[in-house]
Image 1: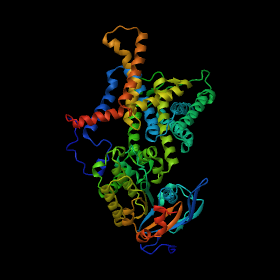
Image 2: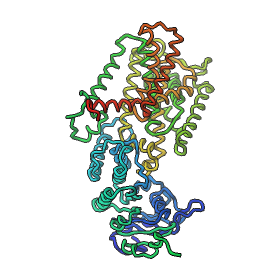
Image 3: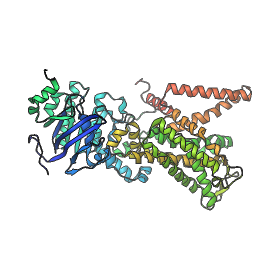
Length: 267
Length: 357
């Protein structure tokens, strides 16, 4: 396994995902230019930056929605060719969205069950009968889903269509749906946007627990600096599509380029 | 009071994942099934032949379209044509192999419809909503053209229509003019019950969840590892299968013969209205929608006579149209999500009665 190209040696573990010299542009707009960083196994990696810095584009590149024009991505030691989102899912990358992207007409339970689609493989024939192997599979996965429901403490909203749930709970169900995939790498796009302090504290606890319990590697985008500095092992900072800093929270706090990007420079 | 699930504890996930977890629902279903089975003993040929058989066939087609439009969110205007594929396939199959059991051919004709539906479902990967509806409209017009122009399909019959030959099953005549209404009723009922059961199994399992996931948020669905094209094509195939069987039943067990105009765009719209009024994404909705659009006008037509009012037949016809239209608008305003939702809300009210919530 390749040694990390940059960044201090904080979180132990091998490199799970490496982004090398990735550039992405839409027509004349350069969303990401020449960005390299890595995510190591078991760490919580934050991606921060001012609005329009290319953070979400970066996540979209990682899980295959966008195909970068230049650069390459190595996941689990393999340099990936161009891939579709379902292939990324198959490889063990799960994701939540900035604006909740739940299946609104389905119950919380069904949403999380849908997260296990990849792990269910009984044929159409058995599905038709809903008997034998298909039912057995259904029950097995239901048991796993119930573990996640217990973990996220959403037992009482199982049967409620998610469209009717308050925002904070929707975010939690979305996290549950991503966890149901048992991912190796979990991408969280602003998991705390629009939450009050209490909800943020709850969500932070869940993120730490997921990292601890399941050993899931997490990459998250977040604007609340307090949360970022407390949760993450390492932080990468983007601005105008370029990487301006990479390091531990303490290093980032005192980095002049980061302070300039956030607060502006006196001219 | 009676409708409470209190005291019905689930001790394993299998019983909690059951399709009718509440005992009262299961009893109700059993009663409805019993009534359906005993209905021909009422000895009312009009009821079985002109009301129930068409109602069940429309329901089957509505279930088919609902799997595609209600569950997977793909709007289709080709229902009539897919029903036609089923009917013509069944006709050709039974003309070429007259000795094979006709019921087998009815089922097989569904596979022909499924194949055709899958082909016309291919554009669904790229286009959605109204635009997809237009693409399926192409299927409607193309297939209708085939039914008129390709004379091989109707065995070069001069009239351009298909006539159902007489076929027997274990010595009982099941198709053709000499088949009794009871026999045909039970066959259609059998198909409807079995296929409703299968549809409900599919939509409650992995496949149903992936269909609904594609409907509600296709980007997130893809991210869960659900591949869009196979999922959508499966929906097209299963939906067209149901429509094809419904079409074959319609010609072989109801009409006894058919011209291409039976499967025109009006048929597609009728089925679409049924599922919109009944409830998108609900199997019960297919039943309720078919009942409202098909049975209600019949009931209204006979209402004045039963009530002892002497109204001119033409006036009754007008009143029927007006009342049906008004009721459709009323139900759509009362509950845009369809009659099935209305039923659910009612059930919830019943559950907590006499308390408001």
